[in-house]
Length: 399
Image: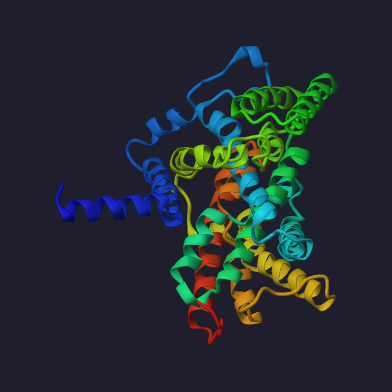
C-alpha cells in the first residue's frame, strides 16, 4: 500500500472515531430523509417509514411500524450509551465529585424549566399543544460537540467538559420525562415484572456478574416488561446502563470493565447506525404547502422561542445562581462570556426533541409543524452561539 493510501486510511479512521464523524453521519442521513420526503420518491419514503412491522406477541402497545421500532427499540441503545458516558464521568472523569456534578446538573434543570415554561406561555391558548412542553428541554450533544470543537481554543477544555456533562444530564432528564409523561395507561402486573427485572439486574451487579450477555438478556426482558407496563420502554436503556459494573473487581489484570466493554461495543453502532437511521426516518418533513409565515404559528413559534431564548436563559441563569449561592464554582478558564455563549448552544435540540415530538402528538400535521420549529430553533441557536463565541473577546487562559 502506498504512503498516500495509508495516509488517507489513517485520516478516515480518525474521522470515523471523532465526534464530527458521527455528527456528519447523522446530518447526512437526516438530510437524505428530508430530500426524499420532498422528491418524486416521497410516496416510497412514506411507505418505508410506515412499513408495518408488528409482533402480536407483545400486544397492542408494541411498535407497529419500521420507524416506531427504531424509535422505541433501537433508540434504547442510544440511551444506554448516554448513561454509560455519564457513569464514566462520575467514576473517573469531570464529574467525580459532588461539586463538579452540581454545576452542570443545576444548569440542566434550569435548562428544562425555563424553555418548558416559555413554550407553555406561547402555546397556552391552544390546550391541545400542551403535550409538547418537553420538546425543547434537551440539548443534543451529537450536534453541539462538533460546533465547540470547530471553535478550537475559543472554548477551554474545562468548558467543553462542562457543556458535555450538561448535555448528558439533559438527555437523562429527558429520558425520565419520556418515561413518566409519555407512556400509556399503566399495567400494574407488568410494572411489577419490570421491578423484578430491575432488582435482578441490580442483584447481578452486586453479585459480581461480569458477563455482558447476562445484562443484555436482562435488558431485553426489562424492555419488554416496560413496554407492556405502559412506561416508555427506552427507560430500559437507562436502568441497564446504570446496572453495568464500572469496576474490574474479580477480573484478570488488564481486562476492561463491563461498562467499558459495553461502551466500546455499542458506541460505534449507535453513532453510525442507530442515530442516522433515526434521523433518516424522522426528518422527512414535506414542504409542499408550507411557507415562512408558518413559523409564527403557536406550535413552531413556541418551540423556536423555547430553544433560542428559554434554553439559554434557563441554563445561564441557573448556573450563575448556583455560583452566587456558592453551591458550585465555574470551571477554570471559563469566563462568564464563554458561559453565555455555551448556554446559547444549549438550544440545539434535535435527537431528543424529535423523539418527544413523535410521542407528544398523534396527528401528522402537528408533528410536521413541531419538526419545523425544532429545525429552525436548533439552527438559530447554533448560529447565535457560534457567532458569540467566535466574535466575543474571550480569554480562556488555556488551549
